[in-house]
Image (cartoon, rainbow, N blue to C red):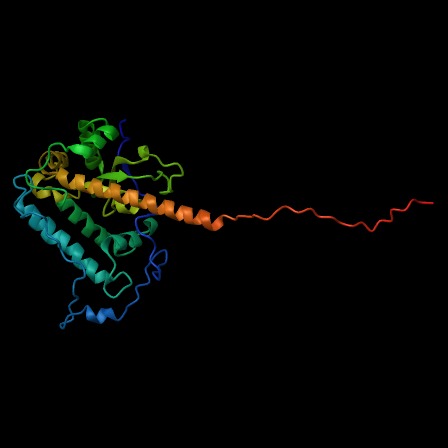
Length: 311
């Protein structure tokens, strides 16, 4: 069964990856950035903010993907752009209620149902770039194998059909953004509602594209693979030839081992969530169940009416 065309989703959806955090409050437009006592601890002796999140290096040397992605591109893309997202995020969250939360939770909270709050772009771009670097490897590309290939063939018809759809999604993302291969499990396509009749067929691979910093975490999808189509990701090596960059990415750079590992992790999370939902459902039903073992009784009512015959 061929998958539908890649979609670019911009409507606000509720995400079920993380539960809401007690004590965390925000308005429609802005977080209540409450300074706390840790603010002082996060300032060095010279008044410099100590980073909460670190700039994580790619899992290979900066020149390891040459000639397909140059060291100069990495020095510019990772060394400047990615670093700036990390530094700016740390400045935005220090001393606020976001301070101390994991990156994924910051992304979901500041997505704010599509009405983005100030730290969202930097938080999402930190996550997106780390995920992108780890989607590639020296000597990558080609075709995957095992369960991943089986699902690609099932959901797209063939690997060739998948590659064509992925390339189209990446090439047609207007302006800056990303294209993704995601795993979607047991959710409807409307508002991320829980599917009342889930089946194995609901668990499938899909291709989506997203604008700017948005990523599929906010739609409750599990990202498996991404390509950065912001112009700074490829301009030094390919100038304005985005389609050539996308083809090289799939043919020479993708780490299918990383994608396969992410698929297994996504399936495990989906199974765990199903068990948790079933447990909560059973608890709810047990609480609501009322067992009445009393015997039915008859009710006799005496009448005040005079039964004597009328004269």
